[in-house]
Image (cartoon, rainbow, N blue to C red; front, side):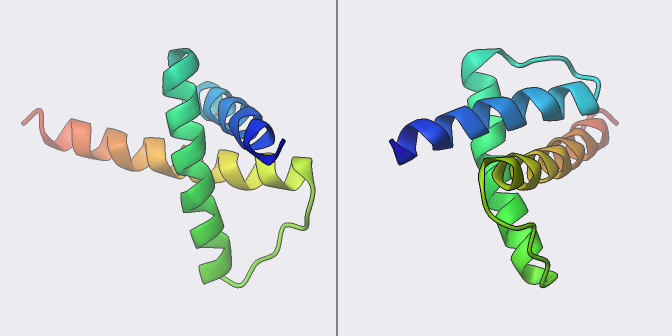
Length: 84
């Protein structure tokens, strides 16, 4: 059951990050990948700064979404840099 929640959180976080970054959705697989990588990045960032968002589904979605937004921001920086 934990794997199912992990997938759901990844999908929601990926979709939310796409909306925040004005890139729209990335499809089922794209949202899942962005959300899961964002969850790992968000967890790392929150631990690095000593922040604790709490526990539960909402906290997991918030951390994963913040991580996914940071991930998309960095990816877009590299995409712009490679166009020159």
